[in-house]
Picture (tube, rainbow, N blue to C red):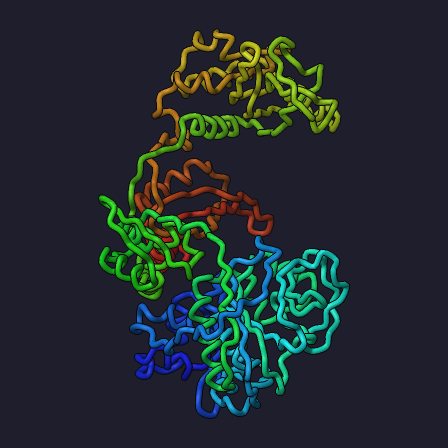
Length: 626
């Protein structure tokens, strides 16, 4: 999107005290990135990259509205009412109502079309936007599109006739000739504007058969907003991109059509003479009302990380056109029709922060710590704890399919069969994980991998009675030595302070295959375990939850020793030295260097509550790396 700076100044007079670079930077802070500043003889053209789906910002009016909360009210040109001289209705049919959101049209007669040179200001703006000036009527329609963001078309009635039909092609026309003479093949679904005898226009591109010429005196002009998906599909299929199509394939505001269309009529009559020769045709079916959004101003500061006062929040929302109503301790906000992108409370929060200024949010300060209650479900904590414990025992974790074959069914009376199974050989849901582990054991044996110990945590499924479907988490693990398996089970129970007698309940535990497989139903077990034993770090049993509001800096360090060291002692030493500045420390590699005959231990250290500079300084000092 390009903006001629002098044109923007007319809409916002307060910009006269500011330079184009300042406004370009401000638009960047608002989210419309400035990608170029081009100086001409007497002006500056600001290039913008409109990344959001903001059709309103593809116009001078839209960009001026974006700036108006910061730089004062808009100074719009006078919008005069269309004179209602004629009582003759226009013969217009809308045969595709689902694709036409709003439409206005009128007939003008007795016009004296002129060269583009007669409109120097409009010609200047069109050239800045790389649009070729043609004649006064065509140039005005293009200028209105740039100013208001709503495309419009003009039809020479001597060519098109007085009847217009908005319809989908439905194989009615096999070809369509554009204004530049290109021949297109419309799809059956392509939205078109036709006369009863010929194709006249696409929704986003005019046609040669009704083009405005220098000698055109009698025209029908129209302005419409369409279903954006329809325009987008038509444009992509025909492989044509136009300025009109770029705007119409976004959600445009139907409420803008009356002022934009009045401006179009006024400018044509002003510069080309003539008179209105029909009634105003207006099509605007009922649309859904904009939903009110609950807005809590205090959340804005939470999202931004800095204090943004409530009065500022409410003032900005009103300035961008929102209707704000008090609702107990919060507010109900109705966005303007121009902003269909505002749908959620988070969208309102974003608007406030945009206008407060992203640049005011500090980037070089360490944020404070905030302890938060742990809301992790107990079952999730139990699963994570079990994974830590079993991997520390030397077990590998596996994942297997929840679908099983007939041989793997434990109890035919409680089995659940699937409908439309993705594999006919596996028609049922597993009732136990142990059959899956047995299959895994066979797989290891095929690859000559003996004495493997592994576990799986997953879901099992069964019916307690017909139609009463159960879905529960289960743990199953295998060790080739049944004595060692029992020892590991005992250690597991000891960690959770559970009595062996508790697991005598068949609803909790089962064993198979010479006691080398054990399975525990976790949903039934979790209620027997103290919350203090459900933690991710089973070695320290720290179960405080943190909301990370400060950065964590992670650095590596290599330590060299002449002899092999106990990794636990190394970690314990540095945990004691670093204390509350340490978030996490672990050994990622142990390597014996043949050349130096030394053992190298690589540590990964994560620092908490320090900025980058302080963390590096402490790291160098602690590990003698300076």
